[in-house]
Image (cartoon, rainbow, N blue to C red):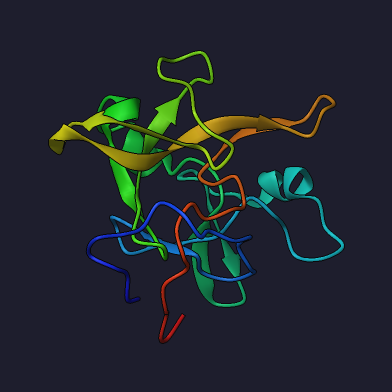
Length: 151
């Protein structure tokens, strides 16, 4: 996967199907949608103990990868990077300060940088009914999508 070393934080677009990022442990990250015709909330039952599941022969995450975030304080855990070059960190609540934008990110310092930088967080999402989960993405990139070979 190729991502921009100095990502832009404008010009984003909707994420497509397939790999949209890479977790720190090498597992693919998919967006917060299931395959056409399926509900992501119905797919949750197929997630393994680390919140991954297969698409054909590729294991991937949609939801919080607990094998990464539970080893550290959730909000400070580096989860991975999306194809727009923007890093993803662990769980945060919508009530945290500063609040997350519509792409699920914020500009704030991280455990890896004392300088404020834009980054995503795993965050709580609901279908408006009784279904909810902590997903890695909101389904939209903040910056322009990078390229991916072999994804």
